[in-house]
Image (cartoon, rainbow, N blue to C red; front, side, top):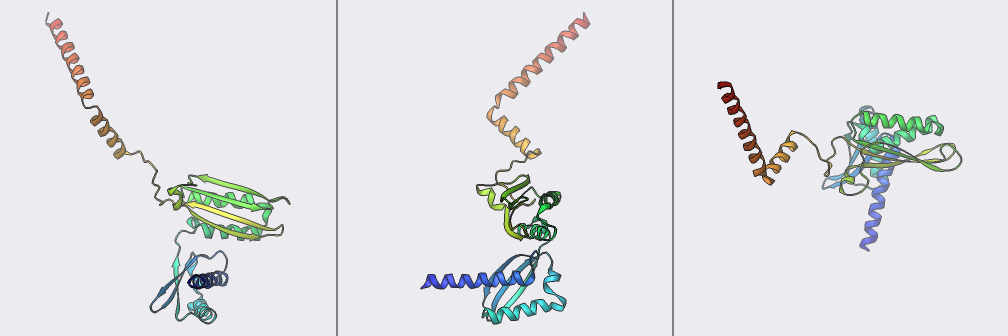
Length: 239
């Protein structure tokens, strides 16, 4: 019985998230999370366009709150807006933007749309990005097209820092699937090695610890040779 209650609870939660995304519009919402507090339910909406989501004097938020409370039987829902500063680093917003462009312009210009978006992402400073389009592009036979640039981890622990999202575009030939993966510039990569002055000094210290006698022996030999050469020159000159 507990399992059934949990599944039902998650289905209702998913229904709230999907309803919020549909109501506020495609391409505006990145993610919707729900937190349960003692005073009620807090619905956090992540968006790059908070003005359009909130509406004039907050009318859209008020209307959405009333509908959620009545339709999904929430006790005291409260909608909080979280602004996304850089939308080009958010995979969901990028995927929705590509979908809207394909629906508006058409699927024949999918290469132009994908390459343009890829250049914008990398131009903003992203370490890597990948766009995969699947569908009837441009012929009647469905296939996949991949557009990638930069560094992007696919497996292992570093792959967890890659932001991934999917979307769909409804075009005249059919539905086009869109997959976007972005590695933001501030992502911490565990296996990345940066060669700077600190790294070079560490290598020098480790080399001296591993072979402490070799540098001293070489330096002493060089000093002795220089002294002999200098003394020999002085003797010849004095003679």
